[in-house]
Length: 276
Image (cartoon, rainbow, N blue to C red; front, side, top):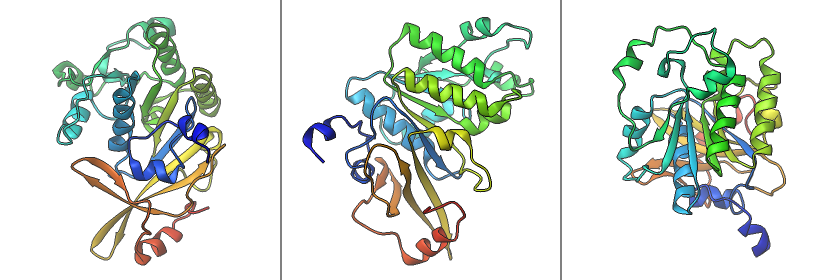
């Protein structure tokens, strides 16, 4: 790889993962970050945003799964200064808008602040039984308005899985295709957090995204093994070998020079859709 090509890559903030990606991600493209619960997806995603902040970029976290305060507490032990990461809390319980409110009005009711300022919201907790009112279309409108006011270069949406479950749209696949097209046209380097895709169907975000980084959490005997695979990466060479992953005090770490244990590799090879 030439020095010029390497300079065009966006660092993930994880040295070993950057090595697997031959320098990092190609900027301005949407990528899927998939994995099971507890695999380290949110930690890696925040690490990716934090790296952008270190480089003087503007970073936005779209929170759907977890309340901002909870995300902040989860990463506080890493010692990161997350104050410059902006957060867009779009979960329906964070706002009391009605189903009858127009899409443009919904977009105006977004809640944006810094991750450092995030705190528990008793009112939001009391609204957890409210009917979901979030769709792929309304999220796209909220993002469009936010981008008109602030030029971000890195965005994380956590998670697409919950977004799709909450959305009442009839043609969810078309909505996802539109969202990914919008993110790409907006020149955003974006990580789209999802569950491991169902190998029996083709999820549009997996098919359309420019790449997929998959985190694995495997039980071998009485031990949990973690590893990462690059399932695909368009326009760039990449490491095709599963590499060990750990979650340490410094955050997610990847050992790009080591192979996963044979027992974990055997388990991984038996998982449908992996190592394809």
